[in-house]
Image 1 (tube, rainbow, N blue to C red):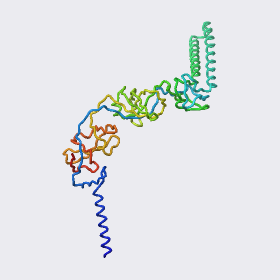
Image 2 (tube, rainbow, N blue to C red; image 1 turned 90 degrees about the horizontal axis):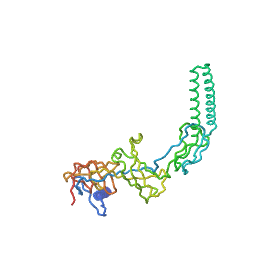
Image 3 (spheres, helix red, strand yellow; image 1 turned 90 degrees about the vertical axis):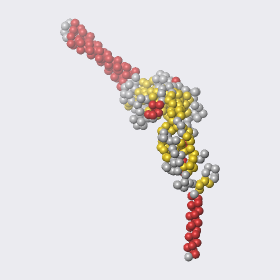
Image 4 (spheres, one colour; image 1 turned 135 degrees about the vertical axis):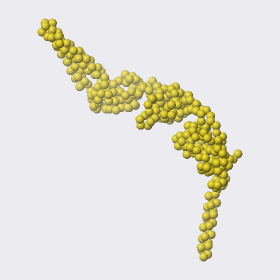
Length: 355
Protein backbone atom coordinates (compact mmCIF):
# COMPACT_ATOMS: atom_id res chain seq x y z
CA UNK A 1 0.00 0.00 0.00
CA UNK A 2 2.86 2.35 0.85
CA UNK A 3 4.51 1.65 -2.50
CA UNK A 4 1.25 2.39 -4.33
CA UNK A 5 0.86 5.67 -2.45
CA UNK A 6 4.48 6.60 -3.21
CA UNK A 7 4.13 5.87 -6.95
CA UNK A 8 0.81 7.72 -7.12
CA UNK A 9 2.35 10.80 -5.48
CA UNK A 10 5.29 10.80 -7.93
CA UNK A 11 2.92 10.48 -10.93
CA UNK A 12 0.81 13.42 -9.73
CA UNK A 13 3.97 15.49 -9.22
CA UNK A 14 5.23 14.76 -12.78
CA UNK A 15 1.86 15.62 -14.32
CA UNK A 16 1.74 18.85 -12.34
CA UNK A 17 5.23 19.85 -13.51
CA UNK A 18 4.35 19.11 -17.13
CA UNK A 19 1.22 21.24 -16.90
CA UNK A 20 3.28 24.11 -15.49
CA UNK A 21 5.79 23.82 -18.37
CA UNK A 22 3.03 23.77 -20.96
CA UNK A 23 1.51 26.93 -19.47
CA UNK A 24 4.64 28.99 -20.18
CA UNK A 25 6.83 29.88 -23.13
CA UNK A 26 9.91 31.98 -23.66
CA UNK A 27 9.72 35.26 -25.65
CA UNK A 28 12.51 36.80 -27.77
CA UNK A 29 14.02 38.47 -24.67
CA UNK A 30 14.29 35.23 -22.73
CA UNK A 31 11.41 36.03 -20.39
CA UNK A 32 8.81 33.44 -19.71
CA UNK A 33 5.35 34.46 -20.90
CA UNK A 34 2.20 32.55 -20.14
CA UNK A 35 0.35 31.14 -23.13
CA UNK A 36 -3.22 32.43 -23.01
CA UNK A 37 -5.92 29.84 -22.72
CA UNK A 38 -8.44 29.42 -25.50
CA UNK A 39 -11.02 31.51 -23.59
CA UNK A 40 -8.73 34.37 -22.56
CA UNK A 41 -8.18 37.36 -24.89
CA UNK A 42 -4.80 37.13 -26.60
CA UNK A 43 -2.67 40.29 -26.47
CA UNK A 44 -1.80 41.54 -29.96
CA UNK A 45 -0.54 44.62 -31.73
CA UNK A 46 -2.33 46.03 -34.74
CA UNK A 47 -1.78 48.59 -37.46
CA UNK A 48 -4.32 50.58 -39.41
CA UNK A 49 -4.74 49.77 -43.07
CA UNK A 50 -4.64 52.24 -45.90
CA UNK A 51 -3.96 51.73 -49.58
CA UNK A 52 -0.97 53.43 -51.16
CA UNK A 53 0.36 53.76 -54.69
CA UNK A 54 3.73 52.45 -55.74
CA UNK A 55 5.53 51.84 -59.01
CA UNK A 56 4.95 48.27 -60.02
CA UNK A 57 8.04 46.11 -60.43
CA UNK A 58 8.37 42.66 -61.97
CA UNK A 59 10.90 40.15 -60.65
CA UNK A 60 12.01 37.56 -63.18
CA UNK A 61 15.04 35.58 -64.32
CA UNK A 62 16.46 33.88 -67.40
CA UNK A 63 19.56 33.24 -69.49
CA UNK A 64 21.93 35.53 -71.35
CA UNK A 65 22.00 35.15 -75.12
CA UNK A 66 22.28 37.32 -78.24
CA UNK A 67 19.65 38.65 -80.58
CA UNK A 68 21.23 37.06 -83.64
CA UNK A 69 21.60 33.36 -82.92
CA UNK A 70 21.56 31.55 -86.26
CA UNK A 71 20.96 27.90 -87.08
CA UNK A 72 23.20 27.09 -90.05
CA UNK A 73 22.34 24.31 -92.52
CA UNK A 74 23.13 23.14 -96.04
CA UNK A 75 20.65 23.91 -98.78
CA UNK A 76 21.12 20.42 -100.19
CA UNK A 77 21.63 16.99 -98.70
CA UNK A 78 24.82 14.97 -98.84
CA UNK A 79 27.75 13.60 -96.90
CA UNK A 80 29.60 15.89 -94.48
CA UNK A 81 33.16 16.35 -95.72
CA UNK A 82 34.61 18.55 -92.97
CA UNK A 83 33.48 20.49 -89.91
CA UNK A 84 36.23 23.00 -89.25
CA UNK A 85 35.07 24.32 -85.85
CA UNK A 86 33.94 23.04 -82.49
CA UNK A 87 31.64 24.40 -79.82
CA UNK A 88 32.98 27.54 -78.16
CA UNK A 89 35.26 28.53 -81.06
CA UNK A 90 35.43 32.21 -81.96
CA UNK A 91 34.74 32.82 -85.66
CA UNK A 92 35.02 35.75 -88.04
CA UNK A 93 32.41 36.86 -90.54
CA UNK A 94 32.79 34.87 -93.79
CA UNK A 95 34.96 32.14 -92.21
CA UNK A 96 34.47 28.66 -93.70
CA UNK A 97 32.87 26.41 -91.10
CA UNK A 98 31.76 23.19 -92.81
CA UNK A 99 31.65 21.55 -96.25
CA UNK A 100 29.85 18.72 -98.02
CA UNK A 101 31.54 16.04 -100.13
CA UNK A 102 31.29 17.37 -103.70
CA UNK A 103 31.54 14.07 -105.60
CA UNK A 104 27.82 13.60 -106.07
CA UNK A 105 27.13 17.33 -106.29
CA UNK A 106 29.70 17.83 -109.07
CA UNK A 107 28.17 14.88 -110.94
CA UNK A 108 24.75 16.54 -110.75
CA UNK A 109 26.19 19.79 -112.12
CA UNK A 110 27.94 17.92 -114.94
CA UNK A 111 24.73 16.06 -115.82
CA UNK A 112 22.81 19.33 -115.92
CA UNK A 113 25.54 20.81 -118.15
CA UNK A 114 25.30 17.90 -120.58
CA UNK A 115 21.49 18.14 -120.71
CA UNK A 116 21.75 21.83 -121.47
CA UNK A 117 24.27 21.27 -124.29
CA UNK A 118 22.04 18.58 -125.84
CA UNK A 119 19.02 20.87 -125.61
CA UNK A 120 20.98 23.56 -127.45
CA UNK A 121 21.86 21.13 -130.26
CA UNK A 122 18.27 19.88 -130.53
CA UNK A 123 16.91 23.39 -130.73
CA UNK A 124 19.41 24.43 -133.38
CA UNK A 125 18.63 21.34 -135.51
CA UNK A 126 14.85 21.72 -135.26
CA UNK A 127 15.14 25.41 -136.06
CA UNK A 128 16.93 24.58 -139.35
CA UNK A 129 14.38 21.90 -140.17
CA UNK A 130 11.54 24.28 -139.48
CA UNK A 131 13.01 26.80 -141.89
CA UNK A 132 13.08 24.07 -144.54
CA UNK A 133 9.45 23.23 -143.69
CA UNK A 134 10.47 19.75 -142.52
CA UNK A 135 9.75 20.25 -138.78
CA UNK A 136 6.45 21.53 -137.51
CA UNK A 137 5.89 24.61 -135.36
CA UNK A 138 4.97 22.38 -132.42
CA UNK A 139 8.30 20.55 -132.63
CA UNK A 140 10.13 23.87 -132.69
CA UNK A 141 8.25 25.14 -129.64
CA UNK A 142 8.85 21.88 -127.72
CA UNK A 143 12.62 22.03 -128.26
CA UNK A 144 12.64 25.69 -127.31
CA UNK A 145 10.90 24.85 -124.04
CA UNK A 146 13.27 21.92 -123.41
CA UNK A 147 16.22 24.28 -123.88
CA UNK A 148 14.81 26.75 -121.34
CA UNK A 149 14.19 23.97 -118.80
CA UNK A 150 17.72 22.57 -119.23
CA UNK A 151 19.17 26.03 -118.72
CA UNK A 152 17.23 26.52 -115.47
CA UNK A 153 18.29 23.09 -114.21
CA UNK A 154 21.94 23.92 -114.84
CA UNK A 155 21.61 27.21 -112.98
CA UNK A 156 19.92 25.48 -110.03
CA UNK A 157 22.58 22.77 -109.82
CA UNK A 158 25.37 25.37 -109.96
CA UNK A 159 23.63 27.48 -107.32
CA UNK A 160 23.19 24.49 -105.00
CA UNK A 161 26.86 23.60 -105.32
CA UNK A 162 27.76 27.08 -104.09
CA UNK A 163 25.82 26.26 -100.90
CA UNK A 164 27.70 23.05 -100.23
CA UNK A 165 29.78 25.19 -97.86
CA UNK A 166 28.76 27.02 -94.69
CA UNK A 167 30.34 30.36 -93.82
CA UNK A 168 29.93 32.40 -90.63
CA UNK A 169 27.25 35.06 -91.17
CA UNK A 170 28.72 37.30 -88.43
CA UNK A 171 31.73 37.42 -86.16
CA UNK A 172 30.93 35.63 -82.94
CA UNK A 173 31.02 32.17 -81.39
CA UNK A 174 29.96 28.63 -82.21
CA UNK A 175 27.28 27.71 -79.70
CA UNK A 176 26.39 24.20 -80.84
CA UNK A 177 27.69 21.59 -83.24
CA UNK A 178 25.32 18.85 -84.40
CA UNK A 179 27.32 16.74 -86.90
CA UNK A 180 30.73 15.27 -87.68
CA UNK A 181 32.59 14.37 -90.87
CA UNK A 182 31.11 11.41 -92.76
CA UNK A 183 27.57 11.94 -91.49
CA UNK A 184 24.75 11.99 -94.04
CA UNK A 185 22.44 15.01 -93.74
CA UNK A 186 19.25 16.06 -95.49
CA UNK A 187 18.19 19.44 -96.76
CA UNK A 188 17.90 21.91 -93.87
CA UNK A 189 19.29 19.64 -91.15
CA UNK A 190 20.92 21.82 -88.46
CA UNK A 191 24.71 21.72 -88.67
CA UNK A 192 25.87 24.55 -86.38
CA UNK A 193 24.43 27.32 -84.23
CA UNK A 194 26.40 30.56 -84.10
CA UNK A 195 25.82 34.04 -82.76
CA UNK A 196 27.14 37.53 -83.35
CA UNK A 197 28.50 37.99 -79.85
CA UNK A 198 31.38 40.07 -81.17
CA UNK A 199 28.91 42.87 -81.88
CA UNK A 200 27.95 43.05 -78.20
CA UNK A 201 24.19 42.74 -78.74
CA UNK A 202 23.49 40.78 -75.57
CA UNK A 203 20.01 40.12 -74.24
CA UNK A 204 18.50 38.44 -71.18
CA UNK A 205 15.66 36.17 -72.27
CA UNK A 206 13.16 35.70 -69.43
CA UNK A 207 9.77 34.07 -68.88
CA UNK A 208 6.87 35.86 -67.18
CA UNK A 209 3.27 35.08 -66.30
CA UNK A 210 0.37 36.49 -68.27
CA UNK A 211 -0.31 38.99 -65.48
CA UNK A 212 3.29 40.21 -65.50
CA UNK A 213 3.33 40.29 -69.30
CA UNK A 214 0.33 42.62 -69.39
CA UNK A 215 1.97 44.98 -66.89
CA UNK A 216 5.19 45.43 -68.88
CA UNK A 217 5.56 47.70 -71.91
CA UNK A 218 8.29 47.97 -74.51
CA UNK A 219 11.17 50.23 -73.43
CA UNK A 220 10.49 49.69 -69.70
CA UNK A 221 13.79 49.83 -67.82
CA UNK A 222 15.27 46.96 -65.85
CA UNK A 223 18.08 46.32 -63.38
CA UNK A 224 19.87 43.07 -64.17
CA UNK A 225 22.20 41.00 -62.01
CA UNK A 226 24.21 38.17 -63.53
CA UNK A 227 25.51 35.44 -61.23
CA UNK A 228 28.94 35.39 -62.87
CA UNK A 229 29.42 39.10 -62.06
CA UNK A 230 28.21 39.47 -58.49
CA UNK A 231 29.69 42.96 -58.11
CA UNK A 232 28.12 44.39 -61.28
CA UNK A 233 24.69 45.75 -62.09
CA UNK A 234 23.64 45.85 -65.74
CA UNK A 235 21.11 48.24 -67.21
CA UNK A 236 18.41 46.61 -69.30
CA UNK A 237 15.48 47.61 -71.47
CA UNK A 238 12.49 45.58 -72.64
CA UNK A 239 12.84 45.27 -76.42
CA UNK A 240 10.52 42.38 -77.26
CA UNK A 241 7.42 40.68 -75.86
CA UNK A 242 6.16 37.43 -77.32
CA UNK A 243 2.55 37.46 -78.48
CA UNK A 244 1.88 33.81 -77.64
CA UNK A 245 2.58 31.69 -74.58
CA UNK A 246 4.73 28.59 -74.45
CA UNK A 247 2.57 25.50 -74.95
CA UNK A 248 4.37 23.54 -72.21
CA UNK A 249 4.90 26.13 -69.46
CA UNK A 250 2.13 28.62 -70.22
CA UNK A 251 4.58 31.51 -69.74
CA UNK A 252 5.40 34.38 -72.08
CA UNK A 253 8.91 35.28 -73.27
CA UNK A 254 10.43 38.75 -72.95
CA UNK A 255 13.82 40.00 -74.10
CA UNK A 256 15.82 42.61 -72.19
CA UNK A 257 18.56 44.41 -74.12
CA UNK A 258 21.66 44.67 -71.92
CA UNK A 259 24.31 47.37 -71.70
CA UNK A 260 27.47 45.32 -71.49
CA UNK A 261 29.57 47.64 -69.28
CA UNK A 262 32.75 45.95 -70.55
CA UNK A 263 31.97 42.54 -69.02
CA UNK A 264 32.78 39.43 -71.05
CA UNK A 265 29.40 37.78 -71.22
CA UNK A 266 28.71 34.31 -72.56
CA UNK A 267 25.61 32.61 -73.86
CA UNK A 268 23.84 30.59 -71.17
CA UNK A 269 24.83 32.71 -68.15
CA UNK A 270 22.03 33.01 -65.57
CA UNK A 271 20.68 36.42 -64.68
CA UNK A 272 17.86 37.95 -62.64
CA UNK A 273 16.05 41.17 -63.45
CA UNK A 274 13.83 43.71 -61.74
CA UNK A 275 11.70 45.43 -64.37
CA UNK A 276 10.24 48.81 -63.43
CA UNK A 277 6.96 49.18 -65.26
CA UNK A 278 5.16 52.35 -66.22
CA UNK A 279 2.15 51.24 -64.18
CA UNK A 280 1.42 52.24 -60.60
CA UNK A 281 -0.01 49.73 -58.18
CA UNK A 282 -2.56 50.66 -55.52
CA UNK A 283 -2.37 48.14 -52.70
CA UNK A 284 -1.64 47.62 -49.01
CA UNK A 285 1.95 47.64 -47.71
CA UNK A 286 2.35 45.41 -44.62
CA UNK A 287 5.30 44.03 -42.59
CA UNK A 288 6.39 40.64 -43.88
CA UNK A 289 5.99 39.17 -40.36
CA UNK A 290 2.25 39.71 -40.57
CA UNK A 291 1.85 37.36 -43.55
CA UNK A 292 1.76 33.69 -42.62
CA UNK A 293 2.24 30.56 -44.74
CA UNK A 294 3.16 32.57 -47.84
CA UNK A 295 3.31 30.34 -50.91
CA UNK A 296 4.06 31.94 -54.27
CA UNK A 297 1.47 34.74 -54.43
CA UNK A 298 -0.86 33.49 -51.72
CA UNK A 299 -0.86 33.61 -47.93
CA UNK A 300 -3.05 34.63 -45.00
CA UNK A 301 -3.11 37.24 -42.27
CA UNK A 302 -5.13 37.94 -39.15
CA UNK A 303 -7.34 41.01 -39.17
CA UNK A 304 -9.89 42.53 -36.87
CA UNK A 305 -12.91 44.65 -37.58
CA UNK A 306 -14.34 44.94 -34.05
CA UNK A 307 -10.96 45.09 -32.26
CA UNK A 308 -12.15 42.20 -30.07
CA UNK A 309 -11.96 39.19 -32.37
CA UNK A 310 -9.25 37.97 -34.76
CA UNK A 311 -10.29 36.72 -38.15
CA UNK A 312 -8.11 34.62 -40.46
CA UNK A 313 -8.09 36.17 -43.93
CA UNK A 314 -6.55 34.78 -47.18
CA UNK A 315 -4.66 37.43 -49.19
CA UNK A 316 -3.08 37.79 -52.61
CA UNK A 317 0.59 38.83 -52.56
CA UNK A 318 1.66 41.28 -55.25
CA UNK A 319 5.36 41.78 -54.43
CA UNK A 320 8.02 41.51 -51.71
CA UNK A 321 11.01 43.83 -51.39
CA UNK A 322 12.75 42.10 -48.48
CA UNK A 323 11.11 44.23 -45.80
CA UNK A 324 7.48 44.73 -46.66
CA UNK A 325 4.89 42.81 -48.64
CA UNK A 326 2.36 44.44 -50.89
CA UNK A 327 -1.10 42.89 -50.71
CA UNK A 328 -3.31 43.41 -53.75
CA UNK A 329 -6.46 41.61 -52.55
CA UNK A 330 -8.03 40.36 -49.35
CA UNK A 331 -7.95 43.37 -47.01
CA UNK A 332 -10.93 45.26 -48.39
CA UNK A 333 -13.15 44.69 -45.31
CA UNK A 334 -10.45 44.94 -42.63
CA UNK A 335 -10.15 47.86 -40.25
CA UNK A 336 -6.86 46.78 -38.70
CA UNK A 337 -4.13 44.22 -39.37
CA UNK A 338 -2.67 42.14 -36.54
CA UNK A 339 1.12 42.43 -36.75
CA UNK A 340 2.20 40.84 -33.47
CA UNK A 341 0.88 37.85 -31.56
CA UNK A 342 -0.38 36.00 -34.62
CA UNK A 343 1.39 32.79 -33.59
CA UNK A 344 -1.18 32.20 -30.84
CA UNK A 345 -4.24 33.02 -32.91
CA UNK A 346 -6.84 30.92 -34.61
CA UNK A 347 -9.88 32.06 -36.51
CA UNK A 348 -12.31 33.88 -34.17
CA UNK A 349 -9.82 34.04 -31.28
CA UNK A 350 -10.64 36.76 -28.70
CA UNK A 351 -7.97 39.48 -28.59
CA UNK A 352 -6.91 42.44 -26.53
CA UNK A 353 -5.00 45.19 -28.25
CA UNK A 354 -1.73 46.37 -26.70
CA UNK A 355 -0.84 50.04 -26.91
